[in-house]
Amino acid sequence: MQNSLERQDLREIGHAAVEWAAAYYDSLRQRRLTRPTTAAAVRAMLDPALPREGCDFSELLQAIDGVVAEYSRHNAHPRFFGYVASPGVAVASAAALIAATLNINVTGWRSGPVAAEMEHLTVGWLKEMIGYPADAMGLLVSGGSMANLSALAAARAVRGCGPVYTTEETHFSIKKAARLLGMGPVRIVATDSSLRMDPAALTRAIGHDRAAGLAPSLVAASAGTAGTGVVDPLAEIARVARAHDLWLHADGAYGALAAMAPSARPLFAGIAEADSVSLDPHKWLYLPVGTGCVLYRDSAAARAAFSDTAEYIRVIGLEHDEAFAFWDYGPELSRPFRALPLWMLVKSVGAKALADCIEENLASARYFGELVSKTEDLELLTPVGLSVFCFRYHPRGFLGDLDALNERVLLRLQQSGSSYLSNTKVRGAFALRGCVLNFRTTRRDMEILLEDVITAARSL
Ligand SMILES: Cc1ncc(COP(=O)(O)O)c(C=O)c1O
Image (cartoon, rainbow, N blue to C red):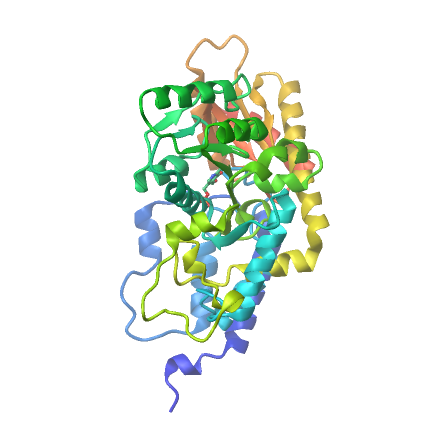
């Protein structure tokens, strides 16, 4: 007799799930971005008792529809501009089903010959998209934080644990990685008037440390900061790093794939000089959360950091490419089939369509910057950087606390459910911050955002 796990029929539950997912995508524009609730209310809705018996799949879908979707923030919504969001795309929903069905554990070539080769292939495409050397090595990881950690681990293996140079604008995962790896101290290098790392200040900081007998190890530059979208002067920083024998890491988790857009490409001219790069297909290639990538110019450095073996995983009877193991180049052993959604996306729409969408996102952000500049009582706090805009409400004659006022505007806007921004600080001032990272977003959405911000501000 079949047990109840064997009795589950994918045709039946899969069709229902696909219908649900398609209806979800169709409903995005009609949905409130967020629905106010509390942790206790959500816990109660999730029915915490351990189920002794199973239930029908239709009951699960009801809970997904009425609770999970209803009380989640919709990152795929065209007016979700918060943080650096992964919007998700239909072909990746299909890929998730197929990847879970094949359930290949992509530890190495032996575990999944096609999955391993597909990962090499898609990582090669990513290198081409951003203009990184074709002979560099790379692998897919869970996201930008893990890519940064992996890159710093490779740097540490060949350059030691000495001081790390970065800026105030750099993503916090760099500092976290340095701390976890015992690297440091982390030096905050001054930025120029555009919030870009100042190469002269970097040179000085390295000089001070050398004079004090320290052995500087790494410069972490940003190829698109999360806060303001700034790209550091990568070519100049690379020259400083080379001159002082430091490892250069470029954190392009948010920005690097903008190199595909002709209007942004020149900003990334120096990225090929970096010893390692982080870039996230789950950001600007629109894939759902879970696909990041780390690239290393020198695969031996990554091997020095990660290579290990044990009798129970020793590769027997295979050589050369067929003996390849991802665990020699990154922290994970068990790894999901991350290349599949990436491969299916790029194959199904082509690189040109993706580049066009990125270009349109950049143009939408610039368009919003123009709208803000033309609107009374709103001011841009810094020029639009890639697809990030930072601005604030500044009513004429207002002499009170602008930071506190704008915090209230932000909360009111988020509660409206129509548009969503997040926050950052620009040179110490509280900023309403948005990032256009969704192929569903139109210029009209930028106009609606402006209307929503004005409504939220005037309602206070
Ligand atoms: C520049 C930058 N680096 C690193 C990260 C961390 O990436 P993840 O959230 O995928 O770990 C982010 C996330 O937004 C980012 O913008």
